[in-house]
Length: 354
Image 1 (cartoon, rainbow, N blue to C red):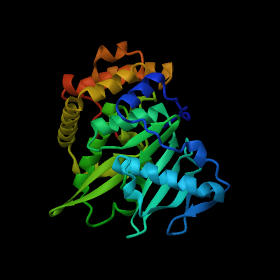
Image 2: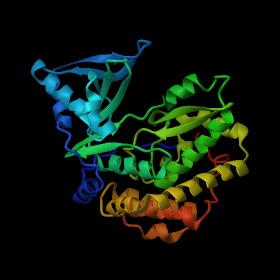
Image 3: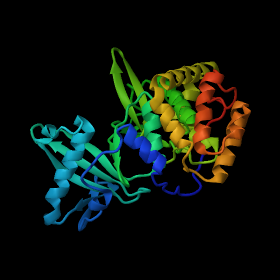
Image 4: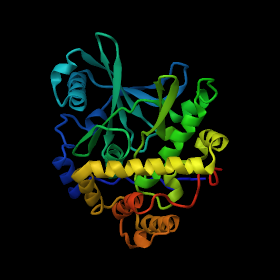
């Protein structure tokens, strides 16, 4: 079973990372900062449609500040969705600003509504954490998903990732007669492989969503990470493998039910091949990110030493032992999709969460 032992510290944006963000268009003039949203003067608990406490609070601002804050939040939405074209926000209004009181960095969630058709969308305002920024861009380059985000100063703006929260999916959808158990199990194997290769940790059911995708006479699924705080921080490889989190056991059990080891091995090979293709197609952008990462501090010496030894054993490759930081470990991990078609240990069907 994978357990996060200690609360991860926030790593500020380094000068090298700032330069990367400016070069590749991730830094924008947002017009408002996280600290501006933190100046609310009242809040109330937010409940879901069933009356359950969501652990979010809806916040309210003094009348003298509310218009400026809401106008600025609409302009940020235009930057996220329309490259700053403010004409798209003419019919939009800010319906709600919520604060996650239990989150590591206490993020704000902005709900924005189109008054013409009542359709709504969300985005997030967070304290900028270098780990999360690296995680977002690695997801953008190495997964099937594209992610939009921007920073200014110590503020991070992050778009909403749509899907059914993993814990809700497990609770409410696994018994659905329309559930395609084999395809869900296949997607989990591929998701598990993606997380390990790019070293994204803590992917228990509360930190990913499930997209349900109808396709002709079948239903497909995509599992998407929504929390990137644990990018390349922990020192144990089990933290980077969702199969080791007990919260994911109901999905893992579907894999054990439907998947022989040779089939699971095939899906892992497929995903590693896709990652290799994404590495090639990402070009100089990905290499610039990785080179920046190798000049940054995003973990502790103890975690770095532990993880490089763990991965050296996993892949039976001594290249990891020469790594001196997490950026170099991520680069070495990505090389494995080219040097080795697949690791030969820790099969999904043999080593699962307990």
